[in-house]
Image 1 (cartoon, rainbow, N blue to C red):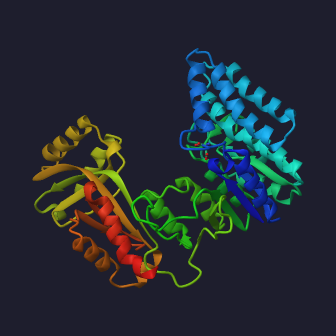
Image 2: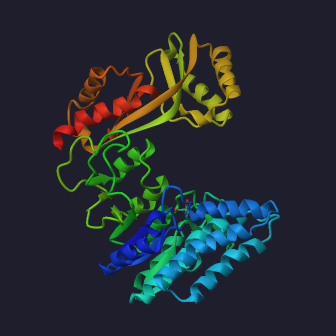
Image 3: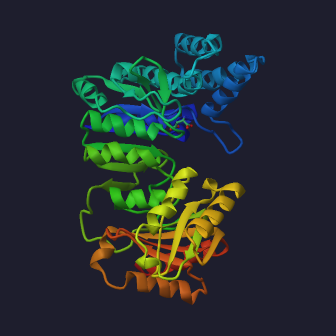
Length: 452
Ligand code: ASP
């Protein structure tokens, strides 16, 4: 039995919805359908979720919201008309969208989430109706009925463990259940969304809850590419990945799947496949616990920019008990998250995302390290990128890092730092952002061009 999730671009128009219908119909195992809100129909278009944000802002600022309501209702109306659905559906959707502007504003911590969730909620109603009209015994199920109970953290909900037992009860349903993604309800019954793009998380939760054999995540690409297609020309798409590899790639900029979406599937040991609604015959990328066959040492190359490094040197640093703790303490006091900490005998670097820093925080760090910890040298370096070569099988191969560094040096790319975690799932290189693209190309050629 499969849980299938469709992203916004797969649900943006009647044409897309017909493809979705064919996909669901073609496999009777596809019994749970989790849906996003309608996405963009073309590059200039607006996502329904973004239109709902605008609607929310105008409503809470006391502005006239008629145009916002009309635009959103028209998005659904166009699909209802083209799919030949009854006016009953659009009436319900129009009422739901309009009623948002009657909800109390003051003291309503969940108002924003309630507005945003309306995008997926109404889409799920429309899709269930469309499926029924086309011979699928389908039923819309609200996350409350499904048992998707989440923490009270508006815009950043977390699933509560008790949800899984309740979800399991859906397993025996004879109907195809259409569940809106992106939100759950709190124990007090408030609508609360995951972070943006969170329908992927809902799909993963449902898959883990109903103990599906597979979580199919349909989007608009043929799976996950081994490198960014904007940087490398025609990179090949990855056939299989492990959860760990996916996590590493996602960390460094692979954004096909929401970061938090892997965890429920991983814990429930549910394999996941990323597929293309516009090319459903393509096998896509499968993500599971381990590789099924002999895997190459490196499965993908990811890069991400906007990093900074706090570099410090202190003679005999290694002899000083508690030095590292004191360095991290200042970061904690300034509420700064750190990412990596490569070190030498007398030097230590802390790599953080640029967004964690402000000029004032930088000053405080420098003066604390100089005055309180007596470091000999300290500097904060900006405009850094990290490049990760990822592959669980690299631990069984000798020379992976050598191949990478050779490729980088042959292309005159200066390495600022190298770091490899003990689990050997990836090797990370820190370089200047201006050389990021070149570095990705060089590494892709070194690891993949001969395998094509
Ligand atoms: N519609 C929501 C968003 O745009 C959630 C999703 O599509 O996954 O962020």
